[in-house]
Structures are given as C-alpha cells and as structure tokens.
Length: 173
Image (cartoon, rainbow, N blue to C red; front, side):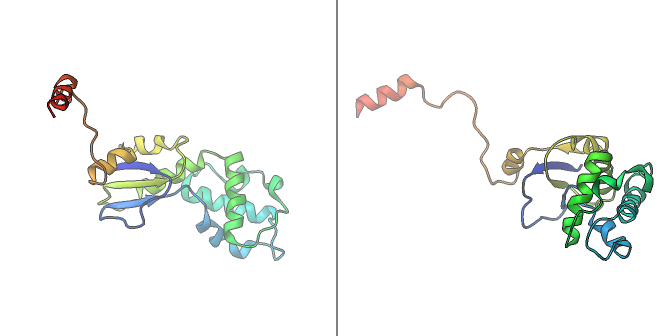
C-alpha cells in the first residue's frame, strides 16, 4: 500500500518505488501556449486565458478559458517561463484555488503502478484531501527515518536499573 510524507525537501536519491510530487507550477501549459504569448514579454489577456483553458483541460473540466478574469494580471513583465509560472500560480490561487487539489489528484492517479512512497514537497494546506481520497496513508518524517534505520526508536518504559540501585552501586565504589 502506498504512503505519503510531506517534506520541505525530498531526498536527492530515491529508492525503487519512491516518487516526488510538487505543487503545481503549470510550466507544461505555459510551454503549450508559448506561441500565443505577446512579443513584449508582458502578460496579455488572451495568453492568460489560453493558459487557464489548458490547465482546465488537463486538471479540471469546470475551469474554462473564461472562468478566470485575467484583467488583474495584464501588463506584468516576465522574462522566463518560471516568472510567468509565478504569475499564473498567483492568478489561480486567487481565482480558482481548487485547481491545486485537482492537479495533485491528477498526479496521484497517474503515478507509477509500483509506487510505495510519495514525497510531497510543499506546505500541508488542504493537501491531505487528495491523498485520503486516493486511500494513501500518511507517514511522518520521523517514522520514515526509524523505518529506514536512520534514527533509533525512542525507548519508553521503566529503566533497567532503579535510582536506588544506581546510588547503591555508586556508594560501593
């Protein structure tokens, strides 16, 4: 059964059956609509609508080109796809915040079949919902470290030697 762990940074080397998921950045949809961008390096209404439509087509059919109001984001300068991604993420957070859960659900459903552990890099927010609907259990970083042998399990119970026995042994010496 698959499990997930929310981490700040995933391990550099993954074992067999482990994958890393990150919050949606929509770079794929930006690349898909690159030809529709204006030549000025500034955001334009139609370009933002096309990107929103591509996002909706992949992750949530309810999100259409005209579901968002890009007029709040027109005229913002960007030089790279990553900068445009920041603008798109901000637009989606304000106008269609459920798309992030939909994108995560899509990634969970389309993960490799032999996945045993999913590292999610990001903040918790409502992240648990897509994992729980997919029937994936949560594991903490500490529990994972103990399982992998990187950390010793905390011993709970009575000490092997009582305080009185320890004092008696110290007095004899």
